[in-house]
Image: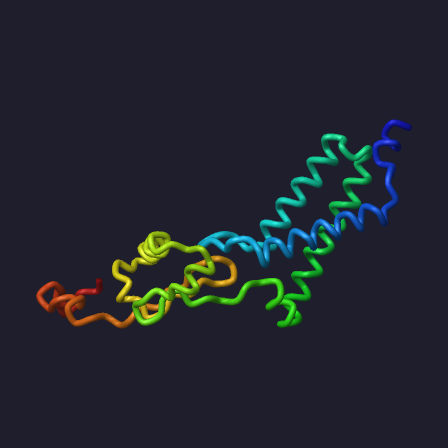
Length: 181
């Protein structure tokens, strides 16, 4: 029974574990937000950060790199607390949301790539073309605007149909009276 109590005891003061977790969380949040590339179609940076930190903290606690599970639980609680608090603050206050999430960037305007933004986001024309094809766009000229959203997803707005792209009347089956299809 004493072995079980020792397993859940704390070898480090809780304030030290909270401080360590807080410093690492904020350091990596700043690195992810301002220094790392935002890939088209990737998951949100705060989500990735949270997953990596929780996995590392949980792994350390399970492998015994902390002397006790209690130390790992204090650190995990700190990380969860910061993640929940920042989600709530981001929802409640726009200034926090703007600070934590990168702004939407226009990658294509009026059928032409915005090279300055593509360079800054480190997105090649081939990557852009591939993501546009995934959205059903064959030609760059068909794109009115394509935006890289804060979560890495690509939003594409196309021009209306061109006359040469519209289906020919002979291609449509005329509706017959009583046809319910």
